[in-house]
Image 1 (tube, rainbow, N blue to C red):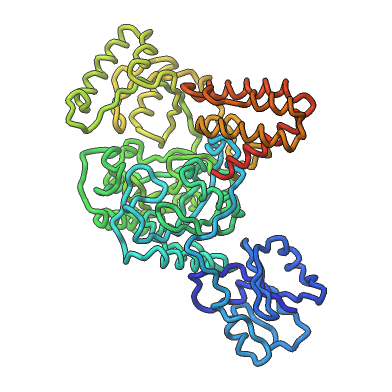
Image 2: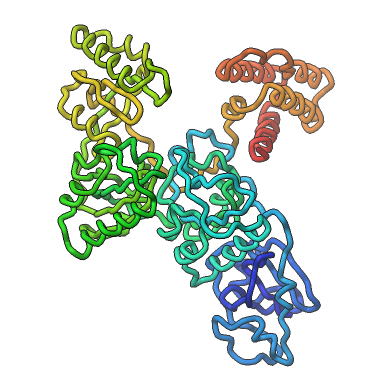
Length: 583
């Protein structure tokens, strides 16, 4: 018999399925498959839907290839890629299932299975760099217009007609199906359909971002871990709407440098805080028009870019001719989208306008330069826009000057004053293009262990930096491009993130299962239950103390278990793994 393997079928699918989205193979009477492609895909089958002699296998994955139809029956002849099921069904002898029968109906998009990244401590996600694009479909149940995965208050006015949740999911499923076709252009689909105004015109690109940025949406990381690089994820729902992600193949490692011209507007959350001069008020549309004018001057009129930076840029990087610094393509940066776009450009090429939290940016790639990184530690005095006179920028500046004068008389007070105001022992790295150029310029002029003579204004604080010796630079952990897949759960992480009641119930359950599965003698089972009873023992303990208590309890349990210790550890790890994966 013939089987039709459909890569995707969903409630929102419209129009004819094409042969570029199916694999048709010959199945012999005994059930074996003669097609090598079908044999390779056999393990990826997730479900079967039957219509008479037809069997449709829904396959999860991407990059599937169209095979020729093999059959002992007469066929309409060779089938070209792009032929539709409807066209094939017009043959007198060959009827594919009616397309509407390929629809699966659900009000919730199917979730990817919990990923094993959940077993790792959260800090491991800080060392994972994911290069992603996405398409967002909003619906009328989404509150606000926040930019996705941004925590700065970046918002956009509503665009287009609001969709119901069911219509939005149907559209997202249709787009996901289209994105899996072999010749699909994800960037064009994003430009056409995405409701994320911050990435839509860029083809949906989010750049290379640290995985911990998505910790609030574990279902998103599950979908990404289940998606191969170069492939498209299933539909994922978050509080922003429905997403389709594409895992982009990481850039080859190289250093990327650039310049930027920033055109601010009133809706850019970080624009006014990082302007190089007085605040300019303009609408988003006015900023877009001006940014396009600047881009034209750079591309077409060939006006020197540094001259345009001086004339138009409204960001404090104007002090360094708009420098973005020098960054590795395999390095987390504050500018993931800008660097991703520059990484595709040739030296001297103009990119943009690009919308960011600073406003609209016009970028230019420049030859990568060697960069110096300087470790510093600072006394930070924060101000706010509140009505409190003590918290105002002027009042805090006066306090910072008094602290600075005190340090000039006695530099030995630095640690004590740092502990009093902020950030004792915190070491930061100053580098060109990252942060306030005034800080970088001041620090470069200091000798190791020298303190700045005057406080420096940052976004919402006055700071007094002290340059440290280069030995204070810690070697950064190597970044991975895959989410972690630990073989066993991180017990420390589980203990720290579990409530007291959860831990009490967990160890009671572990003791009960151990008694049965390990065939413990009654007196051993009773002793183990008493040892693992944590009731009343965790109250008032901080996270570190809770971890220590649990480890002490387990050490006592080991003395009880004797020869059953290894089997108990496996049982305990299995239970903890189940708990972490089900969160």
